[in-house]
Amino acid sequence: MLATPRSLLIEAQVATQTMAEGLDAMHHLLACFWEDAARIDYLPSETWRHLFTTALAEVVANGLRHAYAPETPERPLRLRLRLFPDRVEALLIDQGEPYRSAPCTTNLPDDRVDIADLPESGYGLSIAYAALDMVRYHRTRGGYNCWKLVKKLQQKHKSKS
Image (tube, rainbow, N blue to C red):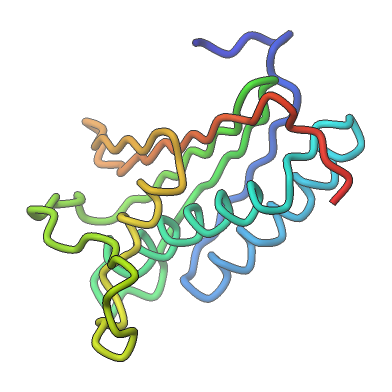
């Protein structure tokens, strides 16, 4: 479904240049975004917001950490959030190296796994795929990595939490 001016309820965006400011800017943008959603009585439940925020933070962190060489001080990242009556969309754009999809060997653990045996990293995209309704990646001809994340709102999305 394409966005039309009538169906788009809220749009917010931020651009950052460094890894240090990237996650802080994302959290600040989300806080303002949820405040705006509450003002128009479109605030998703607290659990929904936590799932969306966790998935978004994982993809943002992956982009900031892995799209650029470790010695690269500037790591440009743009983030746009959009609220529609039926979903929230996030678009992340960076100028780093292309994402190279590895065979999916890291699945989310089941409840029989001892937490002490789990690796400390490697679950970011699995978490995003589990928490969201859609995760899409493409590389533009101009050399940009673009991630589109979508989470549908519940029928009864309005919450006082």
